Length: 166
Image (cartoon, rainbow, N blue to C red; front, side, top):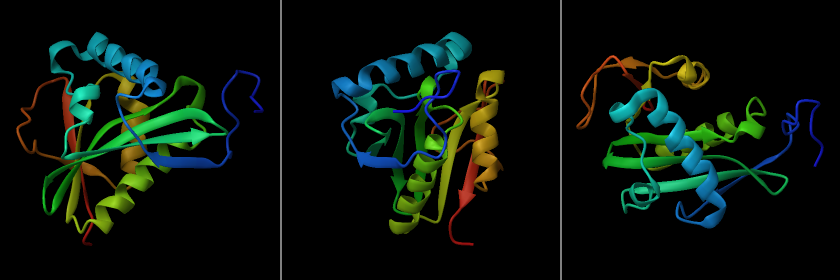
């Protein structure tokens, strides 16, 4: 696969989305990186699910691949019959700014619509680390909202929603 001068995957490569197993060995390193990075910034306030949590019956997990390389993952948790939660979005460091994250987010939004959800919600952090994700969510139409489900507000997190029935 072609790589740019900085080693990143080349922007514009086709992205293949697959429903996947979060406990699979090919997911382990990226999921561990995701959890470690979030916990290093958010400590006990990190709400990311581990492989066990991402394997729950209420959660559907997808991976995004570019030319056979794991580029990103994301999940959709059913909160009720009309409400889903975007969980654990992460692009691999080598796939940042290639469109892999946007592709998997668009897939999750499309799946929410397919399921007939009225809205999608998400919880994310407030640290500088989260700025690219927040920009991605806002560009997809997510807006700030109050805490949902069992979440509690803190200086370390923020909440967003996308109304799907508009």
